[in-house]
Amino acid sequence: RDPLPNEIEVYGPFLDRQLEIIRPKVIATLGRFSMDYVMRRCGLESRIVTISEAHGKVYEGKTVFGTDVTIIPLYHPAASIYNQHLKETLKKDFEILARQKF
Image (tube, rainbow, N blue to C red):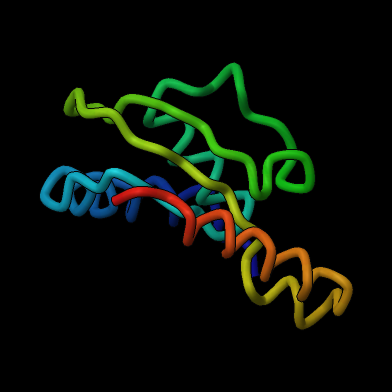
């Protein structure tokens, strides 16, 4: 199910703290809600489009703690359960992720 707005509000700070500790160079978001949250937190509000338009694309942003980060939105893997045609798309998107330099 989709997260409720209050769930995002409550749990978002935990994700923010994890990102601050880990300081990833690449973030693969799974689904539209995580894509939206992470892109907003990395200053990419103006680049937000639907997940069907954004999946598999590479975005460069800055974290709230000032480091560069690459963001790659992916469909949530559960989407391929409901839409079998997304299985191959998801595989191709993961190949894009695998080509990133860490």
